[in-house]
Image 1 (cartoon, rainbow, N blue to C red):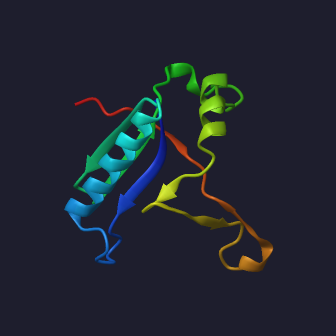
Image 2: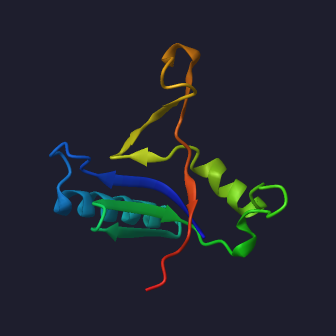
Length: 116
């Protein structure tokens, strides 16, 4: 597993065509590497997304019984508490039909490492 901390996509906006989203993710991964993080980028042209992940975690990244993350994943989440979308924080509403209830920022998520 690896922790997805950022994703870029056009989402039919015209703002992030293929070349721009690819470049943005590669630049961000490079910046993280310069800061000493094990960072990777992944381009999924079939769905039009490029993502940046940090760290590599084994099969024990999530406890199968409790669903809790391993200490290594928790430590990385403390360094990256927000998942960026096109370089920005995204608010996730508790109830999209009633935004007045409140929201949180979107958190990073574990992703399986693609094996090609």
